[in-house]
Length: 137
Image 1: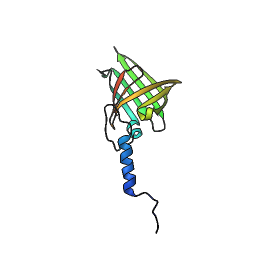
Image 2 (image 1 turned 60 degrees about the vertical axis):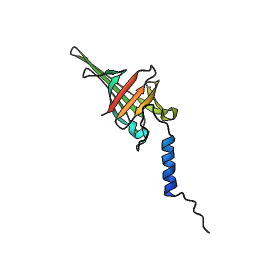
Image 3 (image 1 turned 180 degrees about the horizontal axis):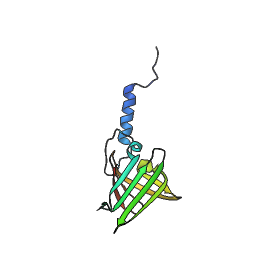
Image 4 (image 1 turned 30 degrees about the horizontal axis):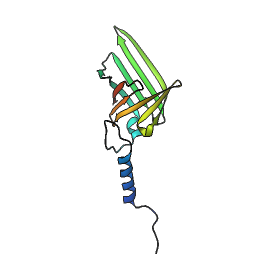
């Protein structure tokens, strides 16, 4: 009698589903996603609101997370015909079992607690409890 030591397809699928359901969930969801957290996070995001204040054409914030851990943050504002923009480059990595990310720019580290992460929405709180709501561009 020969014993098969390879796991069945059903056993592997069941393990994946159990792991997905038991993994860290964000405060505002989603409960289920077929994409990994890294796949949902990577890409370019535009801020819609900061601390409940809707951003307009006069103030723009974009954030880009690359798969390899690179980070770029850009802010632009206009005031009575005067325009200014800032850009920062750094690195990001998961923390707290992927419940948050740590962003490092010029040696300074910030921790952001993710409260919602879908393929098109990102919400997080920074170290000062400022709440950000972003949409994928």
